[in-house]
Image (tube, rainbow, N blue to C red; front, side, top):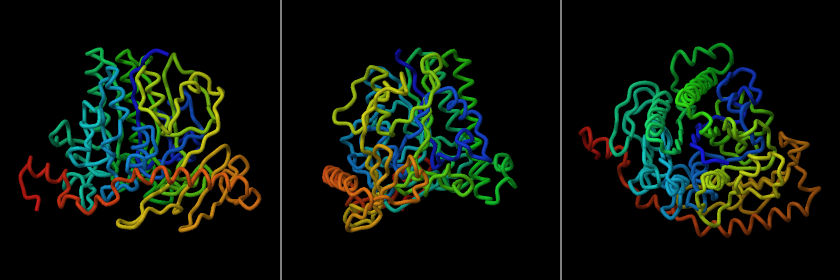
Length: 450
């Protein structure tokens, strides 16, 4: 395969069921459906249960806990400075790299994306626009989804418009610049939408007002419709620039569903921040016109596989000892051999100062099974056969003691391997008194940070 430009779109808190191509009876996503229909679809693709963990695993090819991440706040969202990112890997083979939207892997200077391989940085702070938590995790003060102040290459830029429109517009301008320079590019587009608070353009909310009983779901669907519109504009611009057939576009979501699950959850159990299917199953669409043939691939795949895949496609050297596998063989032939694997999942999120919770909301995906442990301190594994019970309604652990024993032994070994990597557990004790984004904002525009 030839070396492509890469556009990777990662939405925030949109679930697997929040797409019309996955059967949602209300929401319409025609442009994302195009990515589905015109690309390779990984139908059993999994991510982490929440956002920072998924972003860390995607960018490193390793389970997030190997990079010190066990939460989304309390300094435990900071990506270890020892980690090598996908952006750094691609920079190594001549790619221009840009991030547009949400970072959420550390707001302090040393952890910022310009230090982690991104040439172009256009982001908000914290996990969401306007959010602020004790310690380092926080956005610019007073920010909302409309006209947000965005951190752009070392300075704040006061933008005009709705946040998703702003991020896609900036990404498109940057892509146009790279096209003119004839530089291969990696555009990482990470809108904070449709994450709460559900601040939505009135015209987008109106698309679904009265179509669902839950007013919050109408707002949520309106935010997704706006994302879909922007993806449509981006695809059209790639065509106008003459680089559609030179560009791989990947679409995925970052964790299980949220505000839309009451309307439709694709028959799955649970949602974000769980280790059931509804918490980790995600969309994964790979569109590269003229190179990839549209097809479904039912192999067990994950966000961990993004880095090794893109490294192989671009001729880059991937870091050693990854948890992920390259998907290139499956992109070429979705029915290619693919050995069984175990994917380890943990929600993390134990309270600050508490010891890591080994069996608190842990999961192991393998073959057509999902093993789930939700009790602490001793393991109590539930086991579900996803072929016959995709809704995970019937625990078959008692009938399969050998499988449970296999899971427990593998999980014990995995847990022992990640414990030494949890370097951020006590960082909250020395966290800055003022969010770095707030301090930067007040330094640039005036005001006190006290």
